[in-house]
Amino acid sequence: MSQLPSSQPAVSVVVPVYNEQDGLGALFARLYPALDALGEPYEIIFVNDGSRDRSAALLAAQQRERPDVTRVILFNGNYGQHMAILAGFEHCRGEIIITLDADLQNPPEEIGRLVAKMREGHDYVGSIRRQRQDSWFRRNASLWMNRLRETITHVRMTDQGCMLRAYGRHVVDTINRCNEVNTFVPALAYTFSLNPTEIEVGHEERAAGESKYSLFKLVRLNFDLVTGFSLIPLQFMSFLGIALALASGALFLLLMIDRLLFGSQVQGVFTLFAITFCLLGVLLFSMGLLGEYIGRIYEQVRGRPRYVVQAVLDDTAGAGAASTP
Image 1 (spheres, rainbow, N blue to C red):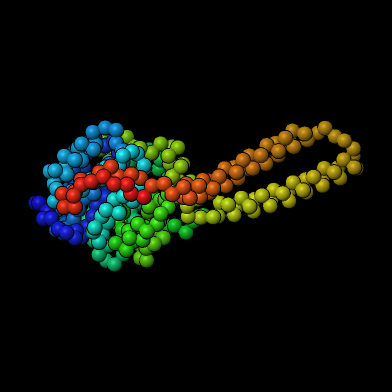
Image 2 (cartoon, rainbow, N blue to C red):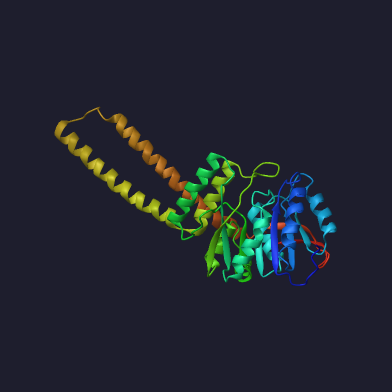
């Protein structure tokens, strides 16, 4: 069943793509039938995030195959998954916007359930991966990071790593007005939503390829999330600094009294070294945390484009190259 073109699609699906050539065929084979089954006008926006394989060529071929509903945004480099999603948000036209990873770990067949939930009056629908098909380390790391995030921010997401989500038009429009250089899209949408909810969705093994998130990138992502939505880490380090200063002062007085009463003693020197190294560790961590916040300010005031669009493949709006802040 072929979807007739519409100037105003009801549903927009944004799919960031980075080095997914081996899995795109399977994605196309499942995504289009799932959206055709909705019985509503839709569009699919693929955002190629500077792939170094044949992903861009495969997306261009698919756009020629289904020009009525397919649009392709080509970045001139790799800017990250969330920047790709923001680019899709700026180009989408639907009232309901769905984000979906290209690796098929979240089944496209679940999109209908998210759309139905949005029709109930929600403006943001998050998702929780059911029977998650990831390694023990990734599952437990996500669990602890979720708990840490909920402790120090007001963002309440059961599963922050699942990209299959639905957004209302007003939420996406508000996100588009933000000019943050680094941001975590699901958390940002949660702060702007009036009636958010969550549903469980299926989770499968990757159709092909491997995860693009290394341990370093996961840590980096969570640092962005924490520093972008809360000042509690800075406030905690301030209180910790006060507590350590008081404890150090008390220890100094204790040592002075001990010296006056009992004279100079060598015992305990290694304990003092341990305390000194502990304090140095806290100091270095505090400087690093402060640097995270200062770094965000530095990137923001430079005013550089968050990403650069090389071309947009769209038969209804024309193609071209443009720079998008």
